[in-house]
Image (cartoon, rainbow, N blue to C red; front, side):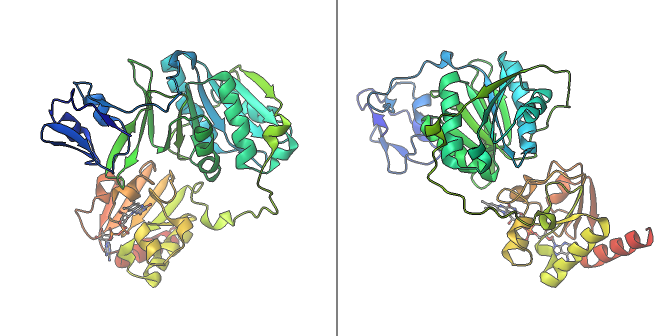
Length: 396
Ligand SMILES: Cc1cc2nc3c(=O)[nH]c(=O)nc-3n(C[C@H](O)[C@H](O)[C@H](O)COP(=O)(O)OP(=O)(O)OC[C@H]3O[C@@H](n4cnc5c(N)ncnc54)[C@H](O)[C@@H]3O)c2cc1C
């Protein structure tokens, strides 16, 4: 609960201006806090009179930040494969570690021999890899993966821990943050270090993607962030890089899990192979209906690409959700992204603007999609797409 020292408060109103939740007001010369206060601390930081305070939990002393050092990446590893996001995070982690002048380490958790995966992580920038192996880790469990990672963090005290915002990362990383009473910023799109105090600047879309918010965790360690796949760039593989592999033997109690896996069923990824496709053809509300949307599938087929959609198309039931690109869908970075009848709302753009070439087809010359497009075609999708298909088929 935010505490207000009415004697010290000078009623200047700085807190009122700083509060994005309209949770604090100055009434009769004194600040008054409402129920919608989120304890974000923005008002405490701007209060020049020192009249605002968020008391820490009783018995909880502020931690010694200087005893936490190094950048860690949780390197997701499933079915003998490293998730590409692990290498992307090492690229980002290397830059942050060099800026801080600290070590970059990766944590691998899985069954069997992890040496080959560990060597791959070193070739992509890790100075050290903690490899925790046990046959029972073949199936992912929030309990065992969370116990192992939290224990390693407690013992080695890295200042920053990064993980992929994948299904697995989203499942157990919040649990680890809770076990450590640390802050966690989900779905970051940009990471940097604040020069004056080494704080991790964690930038992510907020308020429905209308603003980019930069979040810091100044009082707790580690600073934890998840990042969506395909947002950061991996370093080039360098086999000459040297690093240390630290083998970790998980304790029996850490392997305990309240979940029992009865069966694992692989999703039919071939049909929605958006993340790996070089060419993605996406359709939006401009296609008007499911029959119209079929044109997008035909164009994708002609180009040997994958089909994607805006949320409007998915919500209309023309195509299932796994094809949605954007803030609440997938992030893609293909060589070519063709946006057909898509306006270019910010929530869509965050999922596709890293594409190498963006081609937009829209009948509205002022559609925002043209601001990010490499090539724009102002025209009716029902005229342009059939002509494109015809031309492509002829040129074969
Ligand atoms: C919290 C939140 C999360 C969201 N997440 C996502 C997300 O993950 N992905 C996403 O896509 N959206 C998301 N949205 C929705 C987003 O704000 C937009 O509403 C959505 O992207 C619009 O889809 P659209 O471009 O297909 O439709 P519209 O915005 O309606 O655009 C249709 C476009 O088609 C053009 N058009 C119409 N007819 C034709 C024609 N015959 N030929 C050529 N052009 C034509 C129009 O000029 C227009 O530009 C989210 C919104 C919120 C609030």
